[in-house]
Image 1 (cartoon, rainbow, N blue to C red):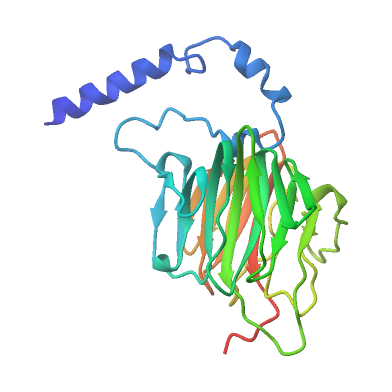
Image 2 (cartoon, rainbow, N blue to C red):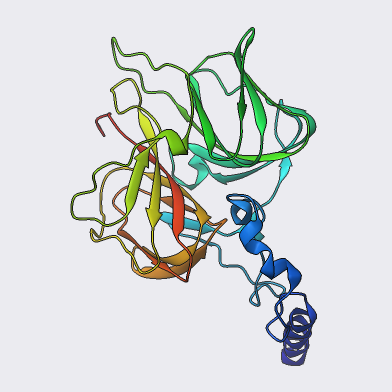
Length: 294
């Protein structure tokens, strides 16, 4: 048995060395052109590395957090969607009160609707889609564009080529006299917000009013920057790393992360991030807000 494992390991390393981006190869045309790739290209098309020999994964699931790396994504047809496959990466089965999934839309694809009383947030990471929110009211959403759809609102997402979107859904927690409105926008139109005691850049994609029971943050770190606060709080998080790489602390463990990785953080799990490498980090972060934990 040990000899078989050694053989597989050597075979995997040999194949990697012969690959276009292997550790023994000269810089490839693909690597030289990487800077010209579209925004968030790595998040939608994560690259493999030397550790991706048979049986290896960086994914880990614990009671109060999970790291789901791209080699673990499992896609299947999405119910009520046309020509679309999805990978559910965060769901109530692991302890969350929301779902987060990637949807890959193919040619002539169309979305289904969320369940009753469930709100939806979509963010485009590759390609473009057409969102229709009322008869004659449509929007073209490109990379870095997003939309919020209140519970029980009629809408459709269509694509005539191919696209990848990340979707958050949760059962809406209503408050008397507060009603959320549909929203369509893009990250670059959101102002930078003050982050006292911190160095990262923060944008909030949804209004902070009481009508909204969650928000989506875009957080930017330059190489070498890190969170000053070692956070422990009652809010849940769902995170997609859009650009860059670094180290994420979850509970008592530290994990290397890169574009394409997804993280779930349960309430009160210790958490911390530091950006490494030569390129900036950007990640998208779900956070429940404006509701009592009782």
